Image 1 (cartoon, rainbow, N blue to C red):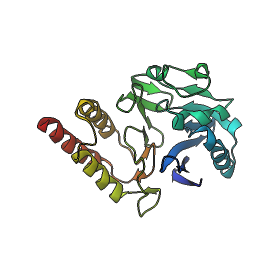
Image 2: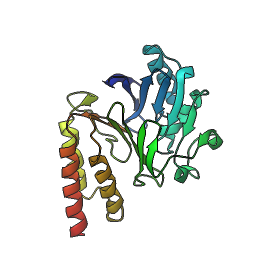
Image 3: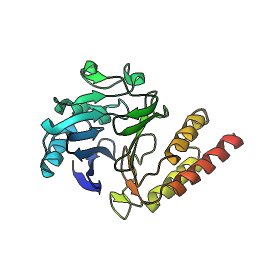
Image 4: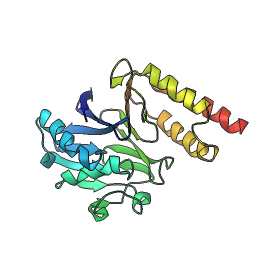
Length: 234
């Protein structure tokens, strides 16, 4: 198993761990601030060593993590959070019954459906799981989409992990055109895209694979157009 650890923008870092069992990169993110480190998603339990290594490479440790927030409760997004004994851990209430974590009572189930949480805009999208949320970090203008919009199993762009990701954008459009999002999920997916479109983001941090930088509004507009056409046709 190998990993990539890169800067996304000032004080925001991505750790992408290659998971050969899933043939995909699993991503988690660190926001480094004066009052401590915020981690968004954590990887599987077996990824914990890489999380520790990444923190050490920027002069931090697991004890510096003050806040952990999860986009949803699947194992690859929450399990390594067992490292963060000093952190307050948050996830949406809709994930409480399905969270893949050994001690669910460690979590606070207080993320809003729509509203402000700390320095984030938080929005329930409920497409990937009932409690899937996206976060927009206001100070850095970075958007975290979790698995609502991700590149699971896709190779990285020729530009690397953090890039404009032209090939990835085109692949997502083709996936949507080919019916990759089932009809019954299209309304929730389209509403989530509209939320993403409302943020002035400089980077889109996904749950798996490539992190997109540069203009994302055009990409999301194209997804909305294709998705709306699919909904009308069906």
